[in-house]
Structure formats: C-alpha cells, structure tokens
Length: 156
Figure (cartoon, one colour):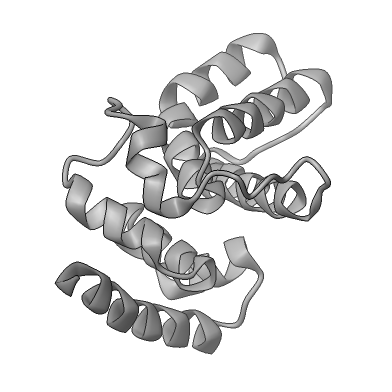
C-alpha cells in the first residue's frame, strides 16, 4: 500500500485497533506493538483493501496478530488483569465508561472479544464470526455467556 493510504487508515482506525488489541492481550505495550506491526506490514507489502471492508479487515488482522502473540514465547503473563488499570493508567484511548470496560477485561477472553466487537465496535454476529473465525451460533453463545460473566463481574 502507498504510505498516504496507510496513514489514512492509521488516523481513521488506529485508536480502534489499539483498544481492540488492548482488550485482547491486556498489555498496553504489547497492544501498541501489535498495532504498529500491522501498519508496518501494510506499508511493506502490497495490500488491496476494499473501502467498505477496511475496518473489519484490519480488526481481523489485529485478532490474528493478538492470537499469534498469545501463542508466542514473548507472551509473559506477569501483567495480572486485576492490576490492569494500574498498568495502563488513564488513557485517552479507553472508552468513557471505565468501570464497564474494566469489568469486561476481567471476563474470559473467549467471551470478551465477541462482546467487545458487538457492543463497542457495533459489528453484527455474522461480521464477528468472520473476524474471529467462529460460527454465528458460537458468537451468539459466547456473547450470551459473556453477558452473564460480565453481570457477575459488575456485581463484585
């Protein structure tokens, strides 16, 4: 891709990808690295992205990069999700309702990602199934179960 196109994508979707990666891996530094790696790849390789599919394509790339990171030896679980807010502090990248977002970060990742994509990013179950490579029924079940876990986390 041309540098201008990548800069446009970064300015338009950079914050969304960062928040998504942050909610996926739970580490500010790793989320920044993942997003940076994605845009470096976009600059260095020829990609063609349809304008109407830009965000979902970038979220899919981000989800795959987060999965790869979590499988890699680089992954260090020393950052406890309970200390999550202490690690990242206050940031302009976090959603406005920190209590809900923090509760979301406490639930299991397999439930957290579909909920985040549906309620924070506004994706349909079908779109989420494409991004996370799950069936639509699996997405619906994870959102349903995740809402139950989220309810318990908010009650604590």
